[in-house]
Image (cartoon, rainbow, N blue to C red; front, side, top):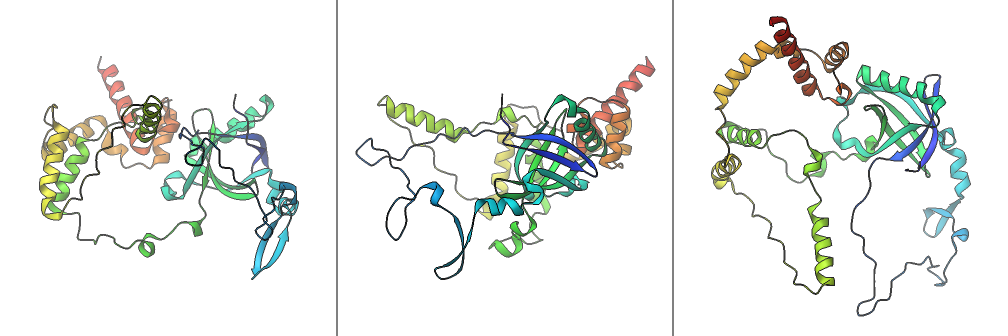
Length: 332
């Protein structure tokens, strides 16, 4: 069983619940030791005094902030703990916002939150259910290991998920930082139509188990091959950049490749027409006019399973299917 990496309280208003914080992901990267070439001798990092060269024990190390050349303000670890908000023990929710309003660039790491004891599960579930029903996330701050984090608490099926966020001043402005950005005239006309057709050809449901870290697999194969004295095969070269004059040809070739061995999809015009008829028959047109919160409310009233994990489009599709089933039942 996993161990909590932090324990404390989640607080919203005057309500508090003791929780533990758990890592939601794990690292499968292949790790190497550093060795001196030609030997099996490990290379170790040591903390040394740069003036004397003598090794310094952990207990003799303090933090120093440089205020001038060679002049430092010394700070002890316990002094940092004393000024930490809530003594590092509180995840204090101050606002509730729509998840869709938070741009993906702000998200950093993901953790699970669990109640610290059966006696706290009711209050925990109350917060989780409120977030799920309102389709909002709780914005909070807390301190862990000497650092304050901005976080978003959101509801999943049966659990609360905490995602750390970057602070606003940590997110770079792409207009100022990036050397080249496309003009507004790009991405129009027939080229865009073909690009959309290619996207449609390669579209499908999100299935995370389909994807693998192929580089780490290759690293393991490399280690195994070298251990067994086998020859190592080099990877293919990266593809060359597509020039504007070859763009249409590259798009058409990509579409043909995506359709290889598949039945031809209907043309965009026919597809749009059939899609419109289908939307009218299933009530999707009406559903598209509703906000995500309104869609979630309908899904709750109809007790649709898995609704707390659904995107706005997923809710539209699920409610549409449920409506079609009711019509068939009534007709029968």
